[in-house]
Amino acid sequence: MAFDSFSLRLIIDELKGTILGGQIRHIEQINATDITLKISGSSDTFFLLLSAHSVYARAHLIPRSIRNPSRSHFADFLMKHLMRGSITQIEQVGLDRILIFDIQPTGVVEANPKRLIGEFMGKHSNLILVDADTGKILESIKHVDENMSRKRQILPGLAYVSPPMQDKHDPFTLTRELFASFFEDASQRDPSRVILRNVDGFSPVLAREVVLRTLPDPSVDELWEAYQTVIEDLGSPHVFIHEEDVVDVAPLRLHIENAEPRRFDSMCEALHFYHTRKIEREKENSQRHALMQSLERRRNAIEEKISSLEVEMAQAENADQFRILGELINANLHRIQRGQKQVEVQNYYEAGSPRILIDLDPALLPAQNAQRYFKRYTKAKRSKSILANLIGDQEAQLQRLDYYREKVENAQGVEALMRLREEFIKQGLLADPQKRRKKSAEEKSFRRYTSLDGYSIYVGRSTRENDLLTLRIANKHDMWLHAKQIPGSHVIIRNPEKKQQIPMPTLLEAARAAAFFSRAGKSGNVPVDYTWVKYVTKPKGSVPGYVHYTHEKTLYVDPERPRGSNSRGRTGNP
Image 1 (cartoon, rainbow, N blue to C red):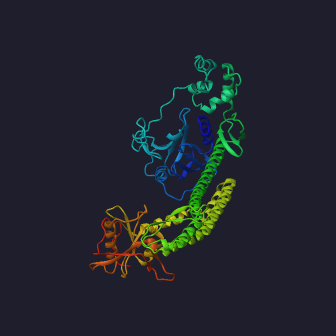
Image 2 (image 1 turned 90 degrees about the vertical axis):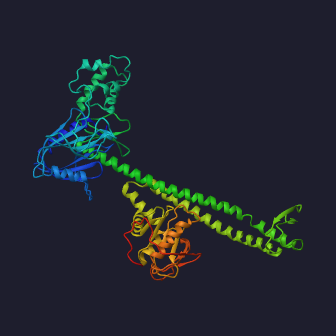
Image 3 (image 1 turned 60 degrees about the vertical axis):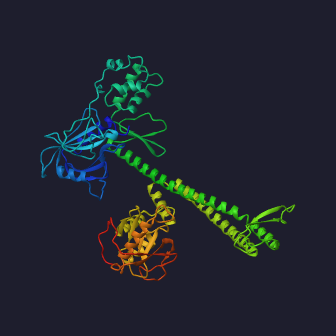
């Protein structure tokens, strides 16, 4: 039941005995849907939680405030209008899940009375501040415009309109005759649906409870007797637990199979216990699922790697075949002429000495062709040993993942899972989000441009940024550019799709930028070297900004500031 009309009815009784007449001292917004109010009563300080969560919408007292260091618009707005305001009335709209606080502000800009309304109706839940005199909405924790609902908008400035009332009967004044009339239609075969359709405030769980108390004979008389016992039992808060998991919370004891009922002195205590445990378990399950997914992704990657290595191993198993071909070429050197593409010989290494064709490189001498096959034999034989070691390493990684998987499965509580998460980050099984955020922040500090071909171009602003850009931000498939033997900025062309070539217009744009942000920025026909980042290294102990690179090519360009800059302008050459 979680939070139904009768739970709210009990909550209001408890709030009237604790915070009615109290003064609002502080308001904190915990997240996008939840707020807490600190309220000074006549004898104590209380903390009220109001939640417009789509699943866990509710209102109840909690032992202490839940602090959130970040500022929020809705909480600040409430503070402005309700700070030091007195709660003059607390009421429920009929048996709907709507809670209304009448508040008389003091010492604020607008001292006219306000209404803080909590609507606890699943995905439509909301917290709304209304001017009591005008009936206009001042603010809400969720804005609902006409695109979201054509029937009822919740926006500042609009008149507040209560959700439509359902035409049902009051459960506390219901008579036996009226109750029996609900079942006169023979087509109504499900008693719980009949009760749900006709009795105000009843949830599906509560309607089923009436039926469960009559089994195996749900006659009308039995249903009426059961209905009366349910109404009498309301006011006995219970939480239902199965194997340490909370299953439900209700304002009475329910018949829930395999669940242990735990009685509470107040509905507020029951709701706080239930939701604390429920949300904590959801966090635990979410953390466990995320860790298991990361291990599964790593396992899939390793298994793909092993498959690839096994294919290479199968090829390496043919190493002896290369040696045999080399031997056969040597045995037939007198029959082979330079320029031949193939030679047919007898294979003396196979039973029956069948004739086989051997492919030759026409550019090589016969003896060189034999040596080519011997080199392939030596390489394949050597790679066979290396591949075996690599496969063994990958299989050991799989065993390691199985060990961690078992640890995740057996971990109890969010804290234990968070410790495992930290361990995974240290072991390299998970990416470090702090490093990712730091890298993202570092990327934002560079000059950034977009070429006409749509490629991102990064330009370092200093020697330190040059090192960061080239050695940490850039990937090996990106293109690196620098004015040839001239101090200046490192320039990177991002290549996330790992294309084999960068379009020449983009290369020219980046080269002109490298020339512009160098000491030759006012010269003409500046040489700019470019190469893939994988060919750029930093010698140990070298000064900031200095790198060594190979496989370079050179463009000669005139310096030009790139177009479409999102940098803060030229700050001088590094």
